[in-house]
View (cartoon, rainbow, N blue to C red):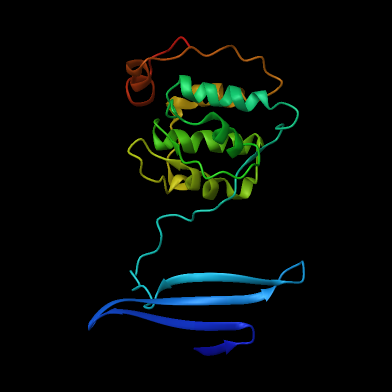
Length: 212
């Protein structure tokens, strides 16, 4: 046992079975004061060896931040409309938890990972539109937050949104989805698309009109 700093004790524990080395643990007990005047103890456990550096940077910066919809308090029903539109258009997985999704856009912490079924460029276009309309905050962290809470249809974390091209052929569709968050617009109900129609809408014939 060695004293590293005032109030901190570092203990190295080696566990052996006979002559065979089993495991080494590094246990750190951090002792400090708590508000009530007693003693707080924080235990941190891990291997005795530092992990080898991989030499690679993380694919994306994961953050706990979420968005806050501009009229979340006055018009919370609009976030529900937004969620339902994305479901009906097969932009997000139909099994997406609506409560956690709504937290993502109403300033409530959540660790939800939304499975995005439409093209990656469509997600970039949608978030760009919401940012341009000033519907969500913080505007300066749109890409970091989006990439921290969305994965693609193959369940891979989405990255590089900022560099995606703008899909001009999807602009009318992006407008329809974004309008569900506009409290001044009386948006008509969106019909549920079947799988084939959704596939054509997002990935198929680009000039085909759909009755939504």
